[in-house]
Image (tube, rainbow, N blue to C red; front, top):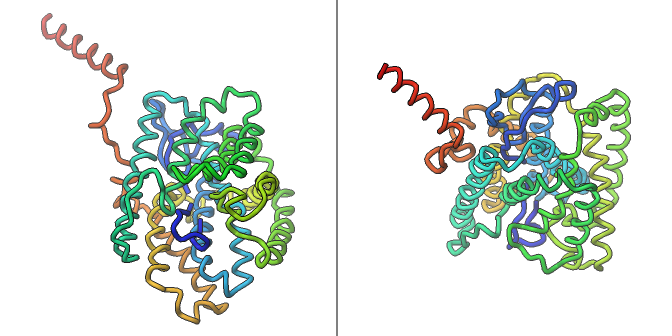
Amino acid sequence: MSDTLRSTRHHGVPLPPQRPTPAPAKASGGGADPGGEKARAGKPSKKRDAFFDNAKYLAIVLVAMGHAWEPLRGDSRAAAALYITVYTFHMPAFIVISGYFSRSFDASPNRIKRLVTGIAVPYVLFEVAYTFFKRWADDDPTHPISLLDPWYLTWFLGALFIWRLTTPLWKIVRWPLPIALAIAVLASVSPDIGDDLDLQRVLQFLPFFVLGLVLKPEHFSMVRRKEARLLALPVFAMALLFAYWAAERMNAAWFYRRDSAQELAAPGWAGGVMTLAMFGCSLVLVACFFAWVPGRKLWFTALGAGTLYGYLLHGFLAKGSRFGDWYDYEWLHQPLGEIAVTLVAGAVITLLCTPPVQSMFRFAMEPKMEWAFKRDAAALAKTDHTKHRRQAGRAG
């Protein structure tokens, strides 16, 4: 999520489209996954659940604010504390929601088609677009196009593609979450994994996706109770205080989960300890976040369907601000400037999630690409049957 430590490596963050069957009405009343698409498995889509759309919108706002705070951390301990706190849970929350709405993925032809058009194609298009943007904005004409080495935000699309493909496996194993945690721990102590498809992040964030797969509507109902909301306040306060203390003592790269412990100049055993500790902390703060997400329809609820648009498009501005030295103005590093940066980040990401922006970029985010796929066998059989009946009727 940050290039501060290694400018030559990729980083970034919220959320492509698998059209899962909405959750039971008692907890979700329907809904859509982070990509904001409608169910397309031959069944009519159900009513969207405002809670999940609200959660996706609020999470993507925190993503944008986190990116805006990054250049301010060196001059403001408060900004660093907010940065660490938000990075503890904003991507885990997104990934949990992605897993929850991937429960219906069964590797059927229709699901695979949606996986390709909703995740793989945007991954390729934006990886190429980001590459040309970096060549132009950063005066780096030799920066290569590499579909195996995602740059900045596209890592999440590659990760979600892999996670969803493995969904059928997690449905049949007996202990999915402990197995996923074991894989994450092993990844954190394996420096030889390399950068292909950002596999460190894929494996270290895997437990949150698997957690989403095993969650049920009643689990979300539990964290949305009044008692949970009241408890979330002191928990967030303690998290901020700890982050303020840790801001000058802890390497924030641990939160990006893109490196092994050895690559962070730590002993191997620290990778396992930090993986489990951060999973626990993230889980607590994700629950606190969900506790304060409104469940009713609000002015921003509809924007939850456009979080993938905001996520991918705001990357051009986030990176452009670094390439263009926008943060060189001294007043931006003062309290009022930091507040202004925060408000601008929230406003920009909100604008990028709106329906007009979705309409403008739907060709890249949600291409239909009917020309690229064979027609469904059942649909072909039905069409042939109808044609034969018409021909028989004319003959009669």
